[in-house]
Length: 366
Ligand code: ATP
Ligand code: MG
Image (cartoon, rainbow, N blue to C red; front, side, top):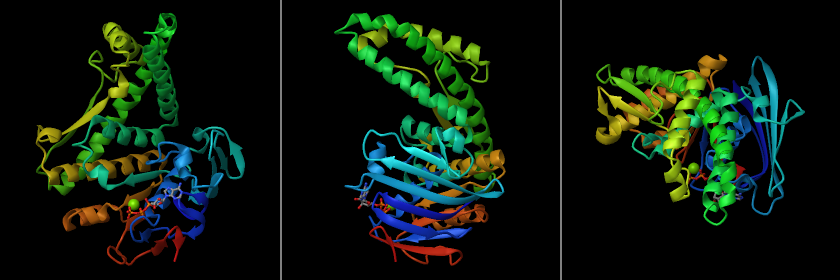
């Protein structure tokens, strides 16, 4: 799959932009704060309806504008397609179009444009807190499985409501009446998340091990372990079994949750760990090992998406190559000889003379 054209109106610092891209490598160069990452954000948002940096959708609307408009022409699923989003500066819900027809959910545009983002923070993800790893996994899994995306959204919504109940019950004990209902639903949807994650992390770990092995010359044995709540002994168990395990878990934390007024545990605290030849990377890994393992994870994510849809997702490398030593740079570039890639950097002509170089200054192409 590839993005042929992109048009932006009032998206971040782009007032009006119209660009055509190379089917291979697109190098986006410019000084700091000119809009390079904003452009990658637009590409990722176009495909998934999710931003990797905005907390609120209004952040993406250009200051003082009423709405942002993004439109792209994509070649995927053997045909030319278009995607369009309008994001409002306010509470009004965003709008989506696929091939000119209005759509209600992101599931209806799944598979048109998949992207894999790789940024400098990802390089240290295996040393970071659990939430960074969860974000990485969720981002990948949401694109692979629209049903997972829907379940995750629902889980987070119920969790928000439960949090409010737990906060309010001190002043208003009557709200506790509806708590069991929320807990039951949370266990059902949570079990679904665990089931998806178990399968996803298994495949991701296997693929990443292949890449890591290739880079380390077969010296290090890469192993990824998915970690979820303690009462789940087998995350591959049937969903009904997982639901009961989660119920048992919540019951044992019922008192503590009431006393602290917060949602203490559940799949929203899931994590994964990586070990190299049996040695835990988070605790003992060197910087180089940590970076190589992170690169392997990202390449694995790209591979899984390719396997799933039969098409190479668009790779977005945000400032990541300049962070790597020459050996790791070569490794990444040698693994991505096919498919479309967007590479941002501050120095023109640094990595490749192939494809197209786009120079950005203050939200304009020069
Ligand atoms: P760096 O090389 O430092 O990573 P960059 O080219 O990637 O820089 P971006 O993060 O893409 O820079 O753009 C940042 C600029 O966009 C900032 O100057 C910021 O003020 C501006 N910006 C961000 N959101 C908006 C918005 N909603 N409206 C207008 N400008 C915005
Ligand atoms: Mg940037």
